Image (cartoon, rainbow, N blue to C red; front, side):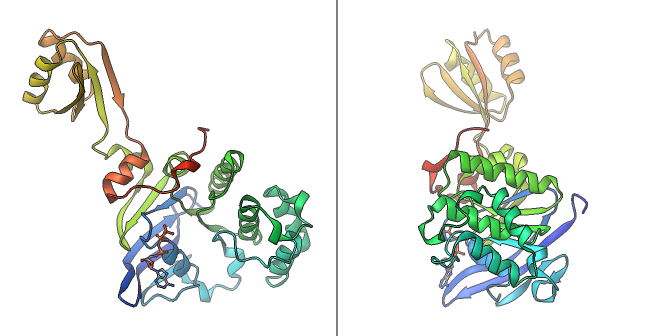
Length: 311
Ligand SMILES: Nc1ncnc2c1ncn2[C@@H]1O[C@H](COP(=O)(O)OP(=O)(O)OP(=O)(O)O)[C@@H](O)[C@H]1O
């Protein structure tokens, strides 16, 4: 499948629960060959959207399409779309192997693939243990194993790194990137902005059930007004006046330090030279995905404490 091919589409998806509008006329398209992060504050409608994309929830209006068709029209859904909606959908008395075997059998998938996905997800050694005794991280891996079982071209993951340790988080990151590199479609929701910044190529951001951004992750970060240049100078006050006259927005968090937006380092350096201001520091501060997200949605991000180490 070519990169850029749209394989998963939300078209005017709308879902209400009583008076709550969970998803409101939501449209976006997800392309193959890249990781698309699905972001939004708590209650934004991410899980509801994912469930509608998978045919697990019926929209009040609109439609979800996979390869241009409704899921119900696909001949072998599990082989075309895999989903890991988090731990929980496993009988606690069943072993990991038996759980996957039952799933494979009902979808006409051979035993060999069960062994393969146990290997891929690092569960081979615990395959004969009951899933009820699994840690959250192991349960997440089992959920991911289920998604991979049918070797599908389209994969949806709902908060896949919740409960994983740093090694597990890195493993998920490599897995997602690897799946995208095989030209599969990878659509993943997460609250972990630091992780999404490392993993996603593209982001779909929703708030209050509506689309608020559908863009390249780097463009999304660059659009944040929190990108600024930090300037330190003994003549900060004098420099500030000149920078503001030339159109920059300037704030200050210390006596000799300025935070300048709307101008790059070269422009600031030129103006400093012109007004005889010495420069002791000139640093470009790039916004993080989290800052860009918070600016756009006005919401804080949960589960910060799980931030992984850098790659
Ligand atoms: N089965 C349901 N019954 C009633 N209301 C629901 C139901 N499922 C979701 N909602 C409501 O719909 C809205 C969207 O919820 P949803 O779980 O889709 O958001 P989310 O973005 O996945 O949130 P989170 O980040 O907290 O998981 C919320 O207001 C939620 O309370």
